[in-house]
Length: 413
Image (cartoon, rainbow, N blue to C red; front, side, top):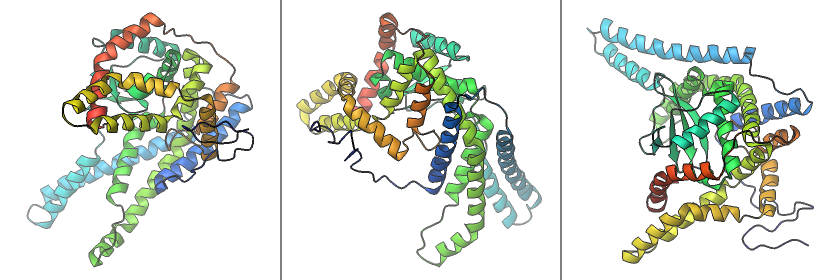
């Protein structure tokens, strides 16, 4: 007999009837589709290697990685060449009219494409060590557990995600911490999350590196700029004809760089998962992956609260918004905590069918989960007890209030 819960999809766990009632997904663009195909292929190959007991070992500079680095340098070399050509056209062609104009355009293009370090966002709260000493102490301890240093800043935003990168010319480290994800995780799952993200620094994911990462950004910018224009007349037809060969060349280079770098990136993801299990426990690392399947649940709940608080006007509406802000994160935690295990299992099966991944460059989530379980249970090595939990909650309280206001009133989700 099929259990019935009006809040969730009715499905059969024996034959998978109705397990995925709406399998249609938005069709990804060409680059995203190729990336997802490569990520799945390499993810399966690496999972098979781990399944045979060989493990993945430490990251190494193989031929593909070296070729990716060389191709990235070539891309940056083209940007430098465009800048030099622009200067020469302006200086040497000053007696003409056309050459300086072309030179100015070339310089403008080179400025847009010039590799530059990331900057901290201006529209999200940024925490430093003095702002949250206990949170940074936890990050430092997790970093030591995975063999790397901590971070210099933490950006807290309203996304259901987390990431790390470097910013500034000194290469300082920053952790992007999505508050909706952080709030629905258990303490050990939070440690696993930090272990996974810091693991990317420990294992040197080349797509996170400045040279390769900026080359991918440059090629993506070229690809966007040279995109085919909808034809409404002869002018659009002429522009598309002129940009056809450059567009195909840029697309080819972008896909080639993806092909050369994605296998190493997949390896880094699996190794980061192993780091998550090492510091937070295997159970917590697996639980983290299961939580990531609840993206739509979290997104719909935040939007529902925002819409409900915005429907009423006047003083009562103001009071409703204030109450929604106060109760937002506790309500979200309770809402996600009430999702039954049966629904989580359905989402796991849907994820396996669709090849769910966090994005187009990650291995399929079900393979990551499978590899963690195959590695055997590991205990947590970093403690996140009640005292530390209370201290970090106090440090994040003001940030939580600010983001609750943005979500409820500004619908920043």
